[in-house]
Amino acid sequence: MRPSPLAAAALAVLAAGCAAPLGEEGPPTGAALLDARVERVVDGDTLVARAGGERFRVRMLGIDTPESVRPDAPVECFGPEAARRAEQLLPPGTRVRLETDPTQDRVDDFGRLLAYVVPRAGGEPVNERLVREGFAEVFVFRGREFRRLPAFAAAERAARDAGRGLWSRC
Image 1 (cartoon, rainbow, N blue to C red):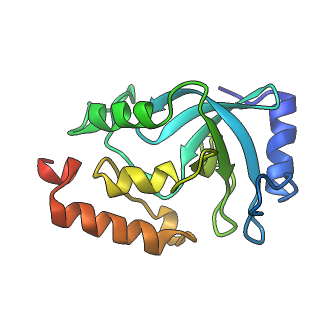
Image 2 (tube, rainbow, N blue to C red):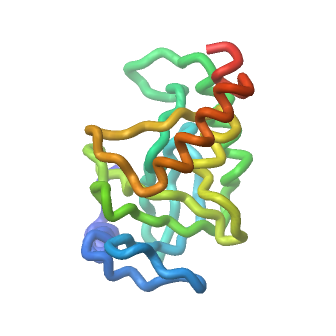
Image 3 (cartoon, one colour):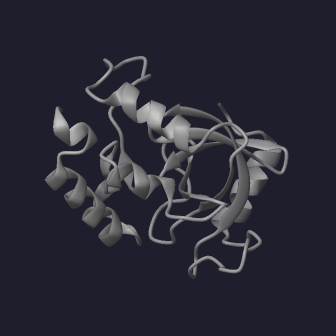
């Protein structure tokens, strides 16, 4: 899905770090926030969200889930379960805050916005929760550590040590 000109402009605003802060907490220096609603979950680490009338493909930053829908790859162990859990946490209509990380690119090689997906109702980023529950593992792209890496790594250690989710059988 190629971004429309309006979506490309919104991504440019995000890339410049000029998105309006949402809620009481502003973004860390260099980060940007985008208030959005979930349209659908694609798989365990990718979703489609709508903000300002535009659709965005979003890749959850800092995690990787087993493949469940990639056309050129087989379904991997715990992939369907990870996708179902993401759907439970992010049903259509869920209000979220998409938060970029100043240590990372704003968009990946496939044009997806790289972001922490934080429920507007509060709580930890869905990215971190999926790791904590054993549905995802930590993913550091090109060796560039991200801001929330220490928390994500601790969540992964706890899930692995407890044998939760994919650590129980994959």
